[in-house]
Length: 405
Image (cartoon, rainbow, N blue to C red):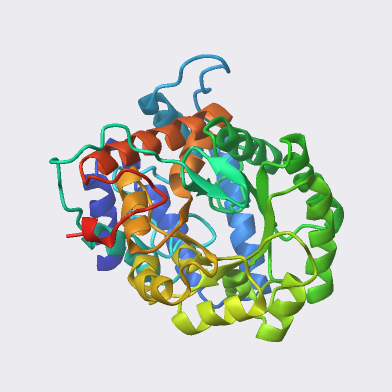
């Protein structure tokens, strides 16, 4: 075992029982580092390794979540999630991307994991100014997006790949139902994602939005133009609130059928539908302005969770300058490293209208289904309301940058 692996093993062990045993982690990460050259062959081998890990884990089934209708407790949800997701995610007490760095496929950031950590650290460096001499007693956590009033400015990030990334102890359909149903239970919108499946399968997944009265947003991978437009047509029949592409996953182009886009191509996509069009994966002022020019109704300031390009800044680092240029012209979402309701307030002060959350909601889904997702969202809602009271913020529709220290 190399010095680097020993150091990582010790780090994982020292972080306590919540992280699980490090042995399987080193074996898996060693495999991933050994297949660092991205390509179809490497992708297939990683997938086979994941399936082998799933089969091994299946010999020791995780404890079931509490049945529907039972009040879930956070500790119970996290315990079940930890058992089901191990070793792909350790459900770390501090989810900072250190223990899972380089684990792609998996939960970590690509390469050294620095982009994942940058997202987390950029938020952690921000400080809130505490103020208690004011009249804010019942803060308003709601926002309105395209005519839909949401109880919280928090939506699930577009996530999928339960077999290759998450260990396979939930099917894609179960995961989608948990995310969609739990989000709506918490008073926000669900998000349906595209995971490189045939058109007929995508159509089945989008039916989840229709079955929830259109209370969802659909995000499509940056495929060829005609393939995106086919999927936009499917989304339109579901009654969805909005549709978009996660152009940041064009970083997967070496191994999957996705591609970067020109402004001309983005204009074509935005004009192909009457639904609000979202472009996810904006990390510069210039591209934010290009998105506005292309006719986007919303952008997501995002580096794809640090999972496609190593050594990028954190989303919270670039958000203020982007917001300064395009705030009010488009809806601004932000994702990356969000763990608490206070993080949501920080990003709002930096210029975001709403945020997308990933890992905490995966834990909720695996640990308690749709009720687990709702539990995590409501936990963040409580943290957000508390942070608003202690900074004198009356409404999430008007958050002052002055609350940041």
